[in-house]
Amino acid sequence: MKTTIDLPDQLLERTKLAAARRRTTVEDLIVEGLNTILGVEAPTATPTEAIARLRQGYHLGGLPLSREQVHDR
Image 1 (tube, one colour):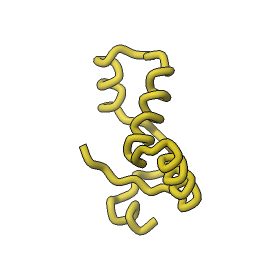
Image 2: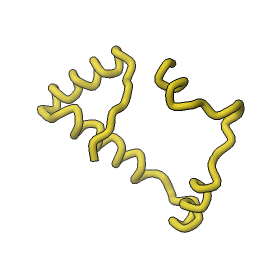
Image 3: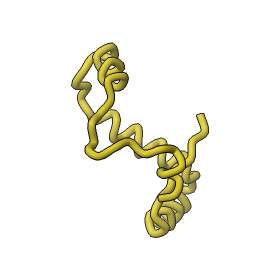
């Protein structure tokens, strides 16, 4: 699946350098890093419980932003 993320310029530069040193792509480096992090995490809920929690939502404080407000930031 394709997705777009915003990275700070300095982090992207470091990522490109690390990928070049490893003779791999930025995409492969990011996938490897995510697999490493997610592989270490112990599951805290069953998939059914996790989906139910996602549907319920998380209260992060404040009011939800519209799509336009998010993109204006």
